[in-house]
Length: 213
Image (cartoon, rainbow, N blue to C red; front, side):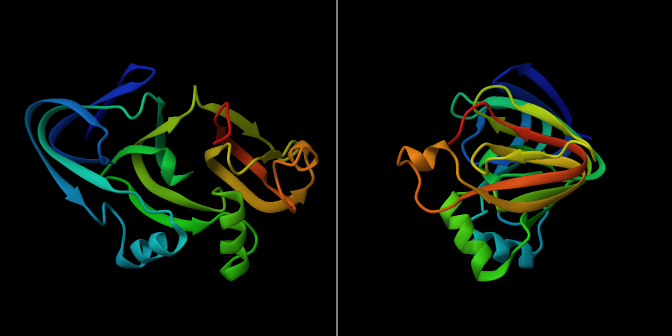
């Protein structure tokens, strides 16, 4: 299976032994060995999931690397975190996906408690954080963040509320709802109408970055 190694906080190495790894287009910065690269459209998704990505703007352009050797990945000077997935589901914003391999099954789902037209409208207002990408299986997913990714524990006693623009992803047995509130941005004229946040309850981890996009 592909072996992921953190080179530094902004770069990873993926070692391949006649295996495949998918990464966002333009993220490969170097490689060694007999490795071939090609564009990938499905990358572990079905046609239905691909259509949903197009409808929700959760799409990303991917390149597949296959062969024997080492491939080095980084993107735009952002920080990289390798998250192990062990038979569970990892939910990640598509903008934060750097790399994953063929052991993962990719998909898209609605994160909040209202779908359809209203859910998509709210996604347009917040920018992101309502529809999100999913990865299921046993393997690793490398994610990007502005500064080190921060994992906030969620328990049944202590839920966590996250600004959709700071949200990166989450794992565990979590349920999520969209909550509305006024915040300081409203009062200083940086937002119009309601402010939306995602409330996570249950048992798991929510990953956020140290700045808003």
